[in-house]
Image (tube, rainbow, N blue to C red; front, top):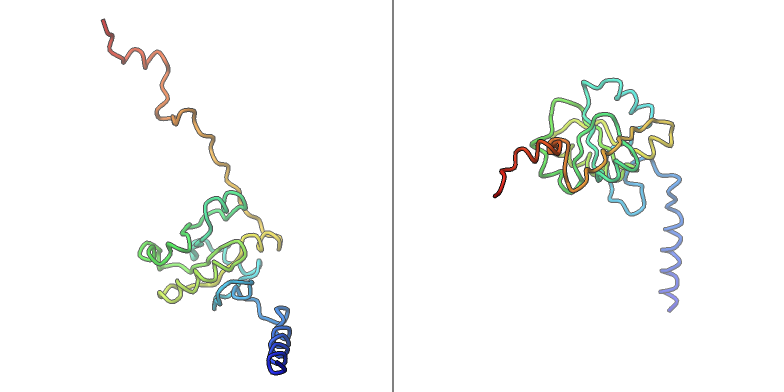
Length: 169
């Protein structure tokens, strides 16, 4: 019993000694996220890359609803993290890639996948983290749905529709 108590005390002491405040800033430090080797970019570093749009490709691994609700960047490729390995052939290799997620955890994992596949990756950034640091996110208004599933191409004036309908006797 004393050995068990001593062992629990040692485990507790070791857990307390590993304070997240002392850890370096990488996406692997988010609670519950797998370890990532990706560099987490600062707002300033990311803004410097954004000033070179012909040299970068932003790969946003968030769900479309997250991009809509939280905001995103003016130009990006959206590939969800679970589909990334299958989409590698469609990702251009001639640009430096920056991955994006909400707080850089998924982005870090995506950066690791891309790096292992031979892509040049500058790092990752969290969209919400970027905005909290003073960066500007873009919000895109979703067009309103047309009634009954109609879209603008299908809309015809009522008199044209009736004129094209054959008369029945």
